[in-house]
Each structure stands twice: as C-alpha cells, then as structure tokens.
Image 1 (tube, rainbow, N blue to C red):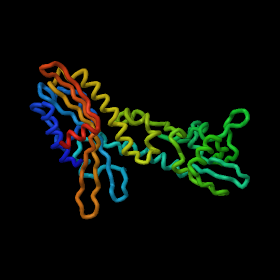
Image 2 (image 1 turned 180 degrees about the vertical axis):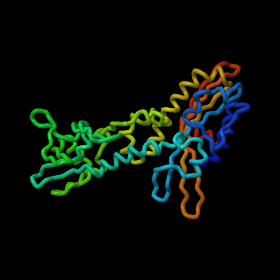
Image 3 (image 1 turned 180 degrees about the horizontal axis):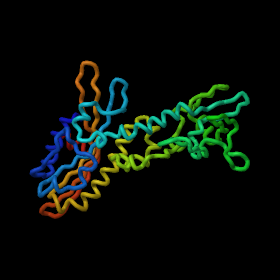
Image 4 (image 1 turned 60 degrees about the vertical axis):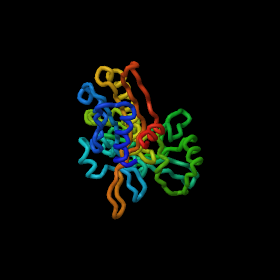
Length: 311
C-alpha cells in the first residue's frame, strides 16, 4: 500500500485496539532495527508504536528489486545503512558475479567434462587480500581413486578438475547447454552450496547493522533472483523476533500498550513523466499490554494485518 495509506491505516488500527495518547512515527521516520533497544523514550506511561522497516528499491523500467534507494529517500533516513542492506551486500554480490564469469564448464573433444577456475578461488590460496569467494571443491569436482581432488590440467593461474557425478546430474536436470570444445561461464549454475566467503575484515563488517543478521546467510542471498529483497526479508524477520522477545520482557514496566509492526518499504523509481512513490508492505505485528483484565498479548499475521490496516 502507499506510505500515506499505511500511515493513516496504522493510526486508525491503533485507535480500534484501544491505544490512547499514542505517538505514531512520521511516515519518513520509520524507525530502524536499533530503535527498540531502549523503550523508555517512547514509553513513559504512554501507549507506544514501534515500526521496524527495511527499505528496498524497485525499478519498474526493468521490473527489478535492486540497488540503493533514491537520493531523496536516503536523505530522509537518519542512517542509510540502517534502512537498506544494499551497501552491505554490494562487495559480496560483486564477488559472486565475478565468479560466475570467471569459472568455466567445458566438454573436451574426449568427452571429458571439466570445471576450470582461477587459483584465487581455492581455499588454500593465500595470495588474495581482503574478502574472497572460495569454491568448495568437494561439491563440484570428482576425487581420484585415493579420494584426493587433484587437477587434470594446470596453468599459472587456472586449474581444471573433472566434474563430480552429482554436479553433472544437477546440470543435466537443469538443461545445461554443453558446447564441445568451448568454455562456458558457470553463470546461474554456481549454487549456494558450492562456495563461501572468507578473509572478511570482521572489525569493519561487524560495525554494520546488517552484519549480525545477514552475514551467515550470504551464500543463500547472493545467488537469489532478487538478492536485495531476500536480504531485506531475512533481516526484518530476525529483527522482529528480537523485538518481540525484548517487548515481552520490558514492555509491562514501561508502557500500558505497545504495538510492534514490521514491514518493507518499497522505494519506487518513477516511470517517465511520473513522480516517485513509496510503498509499505506490512508483514507482521505484535502487541503487548495491560488492561483492567490483566496482561494481554496478540500477534497479527500478514493477511489479518493487511485487512485491519485497510479497514
């Protein structure tokens, strides 16, 4: 729904739930993942609403979720890294896309089927500096009779291995187009179980608000058809769970009622002759409170939450 519709719908929903003296966040100041760490400022005896959001850009010109939000949306946010995972993902997406182009599958004239990769994609290669993508050879290469994975061809910078029977079967099931005598980039066939990231400068990455929620899932995110959208979903899911756990412990001492609502902000790039629009996709909500009958809590799934906001 449009951001304006979400804002007015949230106000009405809170009144229907019995919230009084509630402070609804302004539409351009939807709070981020760290905003619920201390509930005292938004509580202090008042009913409170906490909106957890993560921003993703959508470009209708090529129907894709990708990249950074538009400049206006970034300036309106207190912290760009807080609201959008694009900056955190960028170096890892670049490493993955580079590997897709630099790793080759080949069918030789002797009907050998090989995988060829640069040496810097091997775990025991220490030449590379900084973050690297490392290939799990046991997932793609066939071991010899002694169980060792050894190259069948070598050069100064590249190694070629016989493809494993399992990976060959996967390629055949997905209709891979073999071209005898030609090197074909592995492209989309570089699956999530075939690589990992290493050499990460954790002193830097751990300061990023997305490190704790996304780093462990990078091998699932970067091959995804819409990695920015997938990253936002994973981040939001974990932050919502953390917020609900915190609210269930702290909220009774601070606020009569607390509503925590999570969703995605979609920053819509404008089509020709149109102004840009922002949308909100509500996902889940959780309420904690105390009334005359005692403590109460309830959860709203996406369908019920959407209907309530519309009504």
